[in-house]
Length: 133
Image 1 (tube, rainbow, N blue to C red):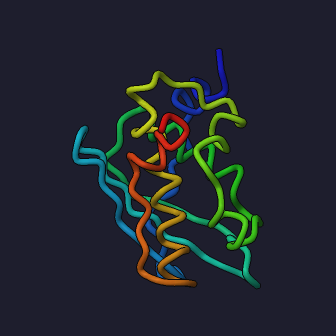
Image 2 (image 1 turned 90 degrees about the vertical axis):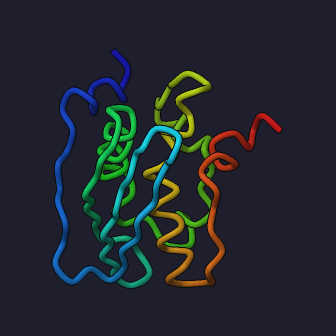
């Protein structure tokens, strides 16, 4: 069993936070996935996040994994993460499922980017398939 399968079978289920520092909704129209992330920051680090969702099992497994990996990473370092970060953490999915797997990370990066820098929005498809161009 790979790590993603374990998170799919035992997902973390944090729900909406009251008064988060940042929140953002991200959608994948192709499969009707939707996630809203609620992020708390402390001294330029992601302290914690929670989410509400309508997600496939793959995306739910990824967001659960990210819930273990991202706390206490700096906002700046999260901003520059690429899809390979997920692969390095054993998120191994078929090519057609990469967009689904990328959605939770893109939601978090877009939330941080909009909060700190500008309204630039990562496109989940370009993010997921950037290594295939």
